[in-house]
Image 1: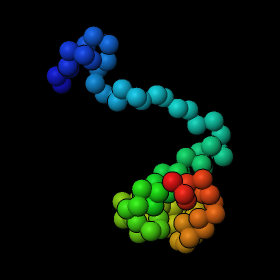
Image 2: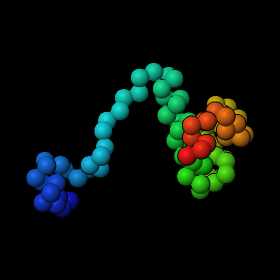
Image 3: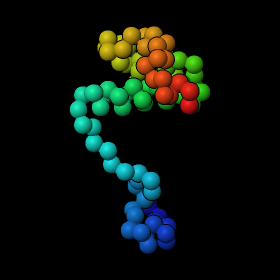
Image 4: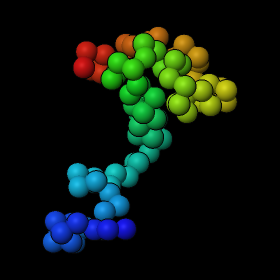
Length: 85
């Protein structure tokens, strides 16, 4: 892999984005919040109106395993801060 002059100067190898920082999952609640956020992102960015419409999501697997109900994203009150973004 070719490494640019600016990356060499900073000691970067090019694998991660410059703004990347590592984040550890603290507990089960933190894990659930991260998974919810990932599933909600296509809705947040306007690609679909509800989570189940995004075909590339792991949400469908979570529904198949009984972790989420299929209409999970219909309850936008779960994400009041995200709904208006």
